[in-house]
Each structure stands twice: as C-alpha cells, then as structure tokens.
Image 1: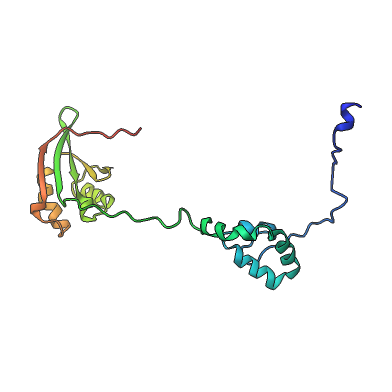
Image 2: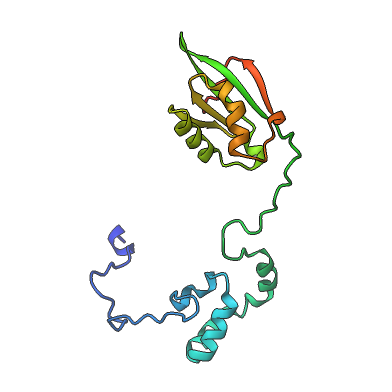
Length: 189
C-alpha cells in the first residue's frame, strides 16, 4: 500500500451533488441566513418568524434544536442581549470639594503658564473653557489633564475676575490662588 492510496480524492470545480446556483434563504427577523439565526441574540423571535413564514425550514431547525432545548433556559440567562457590555452600573460621584485653583508655573527661562484646576467640579466643559480662555487672552490654551487647563502666559490675576463673570455658579470666594508652583507633567506610559 502506498501513501497515495490513503489520501482522499480532492475535487476541482463544482460538487456534482449540489444544484447551482445555490439559493440562500434569509430570516426576515435578523436578516441572516437561516442557519445562522441561532447566533442572533433574539433567537426566539427568529423561530417565531420561521414558523409563520417558512414552516418547512422551521421543521429542520426544530429537529436540530431538540437536544439543546433543555440548556436553552440557562443559556438565555447567560446570553448577553444586544449592545456592548450590558447594563453598566453607574458609579456614584464622590462629593468633591468645589474649588477652582489658579497657579502660575515657569516654562523655560522667562516664560510662564497659568494652570487652572477644578472647573470640572462645577460641570463646566473643559474644552469650551480652554477655547474661551485662549480667545479671551489671545494666547494658547489647552486641556492637559482630567481637570486641568494650561493657559500660556501669566494671566492669573485676570482669571479672578473672568471666571466668576463667565460662569456665575462659581463665586469669587471659590477661586483660590496657589501662587507660583512647579508644574507636574503626567507622562503617558
């Protein structure tokens, strides 16, 4: 017996046992081919549609499903419904002290930047605030951290008037001056 006798015969071209062109029937519920309906999250709706519209195909599916019906109740509980990670529990916001801090940090030899922190505790969009500061002081301004806006130049003294004027929910007493500080850069790892 040679090695060539053991290999199965590989056929080139169409299979003689299949009628071409192949007609694929699609489910009206999930728009998948009927064989793939079982992978759709609402499989029971697909079965209802099949039973109503294509009873002959429903019988084939029903025969295939016979052994799986017992475990389907458990699978239904485990099966994730459509849409990402399911119901995410919302985290309770911690009571953070509502305070806006303004400080000046050196940048280079003679230049400095003004750092504003704490605006997000008042539910202020930091991107909008950075754009406002950049246009108001005619300088560059950007959001650098979760709750930090860096404004190019020393505009610390002007901010004590501008912030309460722009956002009335921030009282002048809630804007604190931290003075000159060294800026800590958050490095991306």
